[in-house]
Length: 487
Image (cartoon, rainbow, N blue to C red; front, top):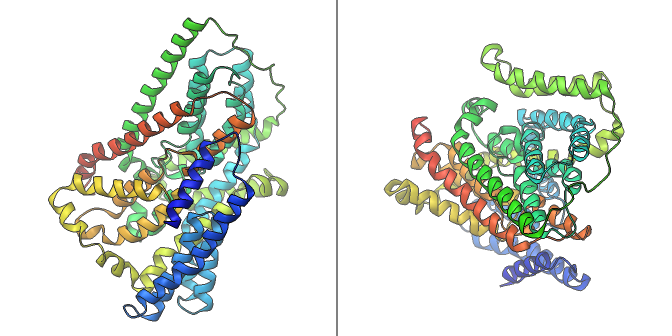
């Protein structure tokens, strides 16, 4: 009941954008959340102490405390994960080499290198140039939609944080909003939101949780699902989601033309041309680095150099040639996400060391006959479970909880751990309400702060449709995964 009440409070505070939650309400929610952090783990400990060895019981107790902190966002996301590995090390539950394995794993260095290159890209003027060109040419509404979605898709290739991509594109989108055009503003916001999030699980570098999933796989599977292997396995789902997104864009453009015909012609230009100040050498050098990275990825079958060492070498070259300053590194580099990824990558080795992976898999025998009887029904039940959990749990914790629980039991039902992880990841990255995803929440906050009219009903409706599109893409991918012997 307490969790339900807290969830209702969060939803209501996000629906009413004109007034934030009262300090007393926030204080009460925080009090309840911290009380749950203190009470629920002890209740779990009392329940498990007679069933499991002490080390396993303590780890699950501490993990539950971290999960509750993630659910209610009481601290930054990296704090519970870091606290967990510190405590299990101090209590000698897990060897230090295993608890901190995420900080010297290949995934850590891969994410570090990608983040350095993303920080360098954020310092260039390429987006400002695009913004200036569109404003000078008085771009039509369909052209603005196309520019925003192209920027989002291109940044998905090189910027691994959906929220970071959305933040980089936000100044471009802001110049296209009209204060009194609620429907068009809603369409632009949808393209901004879903253009930076919809295919983030299709491309390995599109989401930090993709790297977390890679870290949960064994060494052989990690080699198979590097950049091109991941893209190949996710290609059918990507095509389906891209086709649905393009269809939605055509609908947005047609609806906007119809509204303009009914309400008269509107002036296109909403801001004066932009004076772009740039460093041409850094701009072109950054573009050259990314071209080299794409070429190295596409020719990896020839040179056989691991992706993480390619990315890390390019990142180190940025430091050696002074391509990025320390001030920029502090401001533009996503340090919290890097630490978060390092801490959760260690969950798999810790669960294996404590023997909890098999124990968790043994707790889910009810799903085995369902998957054996009807694979599509099993997938539907899994996605429905993810949807229900995501109503209360943020995306990253929901994925970690479900993936850590279900992936060990994937091979029992004859499914590749990557497929099951990809399904959980793709559905958990879907959202309907603003509190469920940072990009949606950021967009709504910006619209309210700028007093820009928009239609929340339109946003929610299309969020539901895009969520259904994610589920449809998974079902359509099943025959393809069977052909790849992943199912």
